[in-house]
Length: 514
Image (cartoon, rainbow, N blue to C red; front, side, top):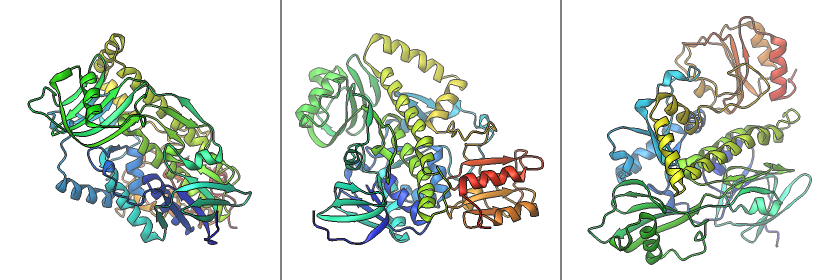
């Protein structure tokens, strides 16, 4: 491979999807040089638009967007897109407002009492938000470019060569050099394969189809999601259909997706046989419920994030949220490592914290597949689960999981708030915690304005911001140490132990400057 590019970057990211772009912006907050290599020449893929590209953003993802100043831009992009493409999803036509689903079984907003999450305050991010990938990625790409990220499209990564202090990446007939490489290049990640990561998990049970078709009229398909003796299908007018055909993934990327093939699958899955006819196929994609995860997220100077690190069925839209969580967790740790002030083991905590989260989501996906199998026993079990979801406690449980409300990292502290997302405290000057996290630094919130705590914070002033204000509601706390990703690392109550605080600061932000 000829070497035509001698420029060395701090970080090379493979993949300009939402995860890669978000991570690029995180690294630029630390003034690192970042190159993003993207295989696709055109970022405006049809399958990224609504309805096929629609994903539900969970609470941690919305908080991440708010804490980095993306949220208003994303909301504006969605408003613009919805004026051009009014949503026709079947759930938007329902009298009750759906809040999410598990294996297609919906739970509703009117069942959920938000006061059951006392550590979460109302904020602009909300609890969940449907968004199409094209709108989200457009916002992230524009911000990345404005921040100085270099994005090369039409540059497929063909291979790599890792050394002790750098990584050479081969793409688009050039060789690019970086101190670190992060694979955000999807479920078929070239980076993961070339670096030799083990990708362990389970094989698929079904082939999923997302199609946009024209149907001969009249036809018997009813709007909504339907479980049959042979699979599951969802029909949304005027011709948007998703199907799960339990064939062990036999047709994913193996069969030509023709109108005749789609018609045959639709007749089989719906059980309607000759009464439904496809006259034209405008758009089609297949997917499966294959669930696999890299056994580790780091090998030397190569890291994985997003679908490159874990894949599962798109049921419930958990994949995008999982990937953004990876990027939010990894960005500040990798930046601190490159800048030279990271404490020992900080970068390894990325895999230690995120791998269990990924494993839990994969099991959540597998459980949904088990509840979709076209068997009498599964349908009986689904009826029980539906009854449970109609109760307030049941709806709350599923909402916690789907919305990401139960996320907590094990940071070795029994205090119930440590390891959770910091509440969005509103201060006396009208500012919120989310706004104070825009710079990508950590925060030390001092609700009593102690001079001793101010002096201690000054020793880490390059890594944290000190905020000495009284919030509207402090939950009985005196001080809170917040990591750059918005995760609480320490809680001080009563008269805080400054020696303990100093130890926590050193643990997460390295040795003090003085």
